[in-house]
Length: 363
Image (cartoon, rainbow, N blue to C red; front, side):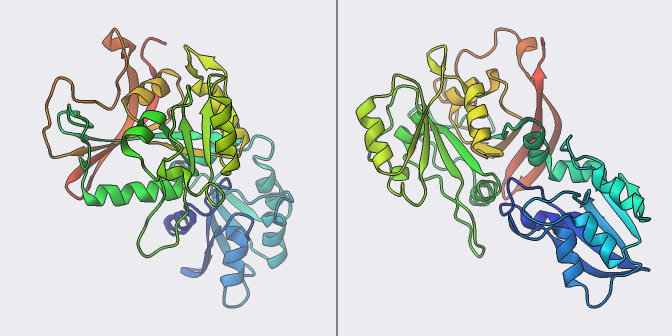
């Protein structure tokens, strides 16, 4: 199953909003074939593993990270294929999280005499597919807040300089995140101050640019911004309110970009409603690369699922230097955002801290 999970991970950035799935076929003590879901709309992992086998897979055992599907979608049911080729045992890491289909594939296999074992490395499989699980159950995107800061918690100097706090290896890692998550979200202040392209650049592999989303409540985005130059090939979504100037909206739409009006919350775009809209557009995961103001709004709107903070071996100081979460903050420590499942790892010279957002402590 560890091999199946590593196979599944090869689909990162290629199969959204489908799940990451890997499969391994075993006869006796030997692995005779592997496969994974390689591309959205393409064959599933089970089918690829069967096709990759050198010869018959009759009476063999399949390890698969997700319950084989039992319904027709973009491809025929995988459960039917396993029955047809004579697989006699299937070991499944996790059931399909979709409440409408969960368990049906397993039931079909059992009804046709196939021995099914459930739950092997289930936690690891669920971790790998955490984005898919949230999206399939709620139709809301899974949001990862990313920030890079100095050891004393600064994301920029008092003068506003921020390049580069994190090291080269960390910046390369962020491009992997951009490739994996379907959308990237920033505030208009980031566009004005940094003029980023927000594209994916990874040496040696074919990568995917995320769908770029800018929160701009008042229509301040410069029409000369670099990200707006390639509207036809890589359009930007600008989330705004009724305060957005009509003429600028027309100019953006003529360039191929999309302006969506979202109801206000305290005079700004309601981020919770924005998530609903983005989910309806098929965006299952979002990398939040905003500044401190947008980060605070996102946390207080309860849209953040995970944080990834890079901590650089630098001290910047400065009372007016910016931090990852700005705004008014919380009045009491007990009102703050709770984090769990914290993990740390070294990325070059930086420390990457990853954690799940639980809730505010006073809820």
